[in-house]
Length: 40
View 1 (cartoon, rainbow, N blue to C red):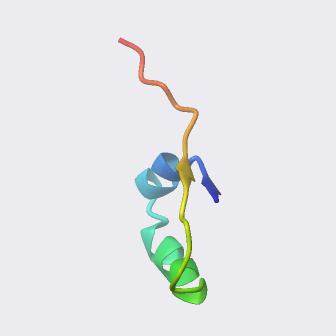
View 2: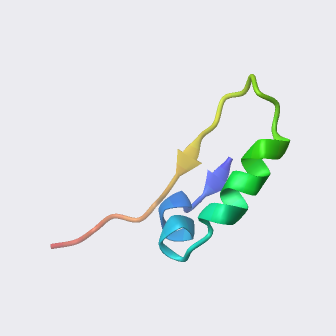
View 3: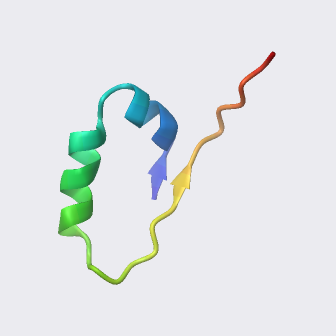
């Protein structure tokens, strides 16, 4: 599970996320969570 996935992507963590995902089993369930709600 990656918490605040949208903020991680905004901050440039995509290479790190890809590296972590390569180390995970091929058969898996991947969940991305964020508590960020955009206000108007």
